[in-house]
Amino acid sequence: MNIFVTSIDTDSGKTLVSAILCEAMRADYWKPVQAGFPRDAVTVRQLVTNTDTTIHRETFLLNTAASPHAAAKIDGVDMRLSDFKLPPTDRDLIIEGAGGCLVPLNDSEFVIDLAAHLGATVILVADLYLGSINHTLLTAEALHRRGITPVGLIFNGDPNPESERIICHHTGFEVLLHIRREGAINPEIVKQYAELFNRKRNE
Image (cartoon, rainbow, N blue to C red):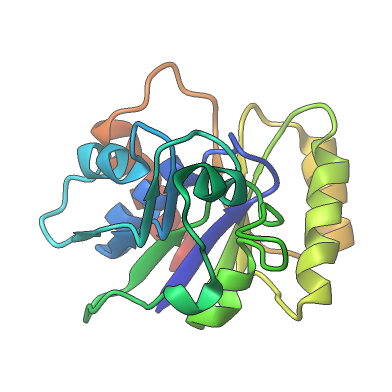
């Protein structure tokens, strides 16, 4: 299974979620576009403790921490969906998007278009903050217009029961996991959430 991790905004927790999924599923990891440093692939490698996960190299490693289309322009790179090919693996693959789902790759293609191009199912990460209801529902509409129904939603941040309820009410998305605000993110925390994800998956 290829799972594309996308989000409602840039700092939603996609990298943490990707590490948790890799640990839970003993899956490989791939970030097709990295704009700026440090590399998210390095972070995932540091957080995952199982010996099965392979970290695949980025298709585009851009120097500037900016929208991929802008970072590519600075580097003199022409980036198109057709440039992206799945890395060879016999394992499940966690694919981490860049920024929110409607971050542009170029003038006509968006990060979320990679999911369909790569034949991947989608998990949506929604961090909880003032305004996240609006951003999550707008993201759900954008996905719906593209014929994409995420297999589930992962909340990230301090619990907000009413925000979570109304988001689920309007989207119908299944909640796969809720990551609380942690004082430190380390392999032990990732392992704990991986075990929780697997328990919920097997219920």
